[in-house]
Image (cartoon, rainbow, N blue to C red; front, side, top):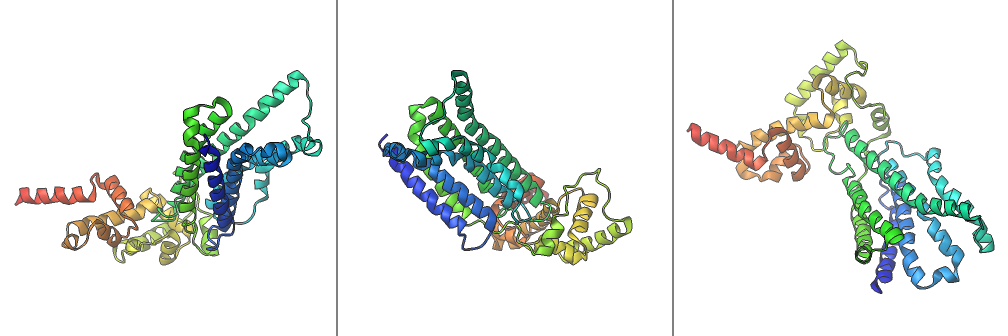
Length: 375
């Protein structure tokens, strides 16, 4: 157990460093989202710091500061959620509504204010004390669970939304944040164990888990590219796109719909714009002479699909041709993926199997066997 406070102290230091790097993000990418993520990591670092401080009897020497560090926990979950809100939002302006998320922290800060002034706890009757103790014990775990659910739901919606305008989502789908939330489940369980159960076996691996989670965040957060890398006009247009539903009223007239469909077919079949690795809805819309809203509606209405699936179906068709051509002997699977418009081998393999039912390698082998039989 002697290593416990040491590892937590190291982890806390690593969290502070990462937090400050994100707050002062030199690349100026996803600036507001990274600042809130940095603040989240700093509060996480303060939470971890409580343990080594406790072992140094800091709570006895400076009870007010130690109590304040404990209250900062009520900022941790809201800051992570707000960070995810900005990561997944087209707008990067400050929204006053987010201030409501800090209400629990302010409430408990005011509740503990007499302690900061007098150094003494408020005295209650026995029955009231039981209620107060219950609220204090359950408030933080309840807040954590609620914000975890809200954060996870927001990331799920983000994955669906970006497929309406991007043909390559692997670098902007924020899957690393989703995985971090799953890691947080284990951390929350370990934390609840410390609070309620104090099981020895779980306590032993908790510091290492905290340390690994900070390294995980450091690796992925610092290399995350801009989520919505578009100019202001494109962002304004994209913000008007709604999730397509069959019962939605038509946003384009019949004549305009047919005109845009003809342009779309020409771009896909003759010019093969889907081979552009960075093809996006705004780019396609400009080539069609349409707005993003119109281009999205044409794909939704006439092809019953989102932009991501629509483009990648064409890419898979191109990949099938390349895999059965002489080019396959000159290119590996990654080369075929790039030639077909994909940005990664993983996405190519996953998408290919989704539509064809076979991996690219299995597809080549099955066709080779078929050719032998026909010969």
